Length: 366
Image 1 (tube, rainbow, N blue to C red):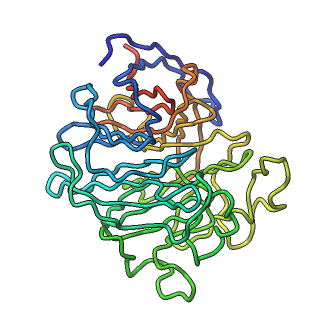
Image 2: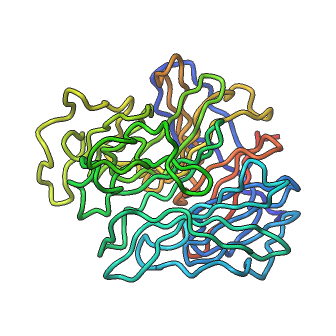
């Protein structure tokens, strides 16, 4: 870890409840020189896995970046927002060595979200297996989703974006665009998925009506599943996810098109779930974590969320399923925050989305 420590204070606070107490934070650079890092995950032995959107899976051990990327990774489609996305070790990684990765796959004219499963051994991916590909190809290189999460029952959730130009398909159950899919570890659809057996519906779909989800968190204590998603110009959302629900996009949204045109006259519609929180102007939410460490006891149970446009770490205090307080942290660093994780040591770790991106560690100021 670099000896130089970046001293950072809260840039500003947006407070619903006036009880927020600002505090100084110590932010240190663990690793630099990452090319648009996207996702971060710990292994049981303390090593870190980091994806680079350019198509590399990296290992960080004892604060040092292995100069050699993990071998055996299929080459993703890399362009604009396309590339390698999430890395997610299996819950039983210590025994199975299984690791799941999401990526864009194909060419500029025809590509889609792909999820693979592989065994990580001695710096290489072995037994690479395709377990999911989105149902339809897109000729855009944006809006893939790509976040993944294991539920306590062992099933895997994967977010699939609307491909930008295909937003109307987010209201259709006949495509994966604009959905969260739920899979068994072999990629099959669990028998209790909400649309299994429904005519003209893909059995993998868990929820629909999404634009581009890039943050997920499951609160085991309350059994709540939270996600956020990007709006267009404004209209970023925080949602409480429930099986089978329709989250409205693009029929209902608080955002407007990039041209300034109105996408829809409706912010809410019957039968569609309204967001619990909306950000306008857009903050471009990214990685998401639930704080459960010991270094920040006052944050226990809070949602931590990165912002690409806000260039801040958002701390959301949630009570009884409602956001009652929001605080913006480390905004003076002027870094696009791509992923947020809570480490085994209770520190908060961030990935910054730049060509010379960093892995940062946040602890209370001493």
